[in-house]
Image (cartoon, rainbow, N blue to C red; front, side, top):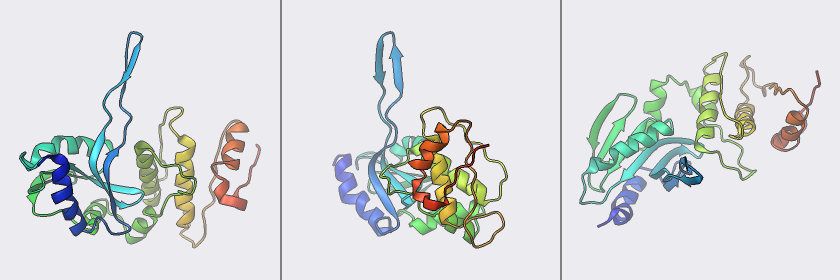
Length: 245
């Protein structure tokens, strides 16, 4: 049996048995998350191979939690672990799995332990292990998992998703200062909008009152305010207001 046969016959049923095919949990097969590094050699430009995970497990649509790498059944269960670890570190996750369909190897980045397990953990088990380590209260967990805005049809790139979730978690943990460093053209406005949307939708505010927050979006030129106000931030409706200083 090749790798595709192993996935279809063994891995998919085991993921379904663990509950990963039940809403709001999900998994994505053959998830490509980079376009490949650009390599310049003289006048020639080419891209290296894309990074593609066999399975990306998501606790919710906006919250990935683990990577599963699959190998053919004639290989060892742990042969894909090094690749799984690499992808987990890139995607800022905590759990890596490698399997040949028969055996399953887990690496827990929280404890640093690698172990052989009988079946995939359930979504709630992984989420509880992660949230306990990060000392997330029930209120923080509920607000952290508030859905992003998807009606625009624009999906977050992996590094944008990391920036959004890290920032929202830091704010919910009452950290007063958070610095996001992003290059030009990498979607700073999109990330800012999604952070605002999640805090707005969850009714977070520093006073702990049941109301939506007041958020200040600053820029040094009118065009940098008018364009996102009329396009990206249009879903906030009448809550938007422009002030010129």
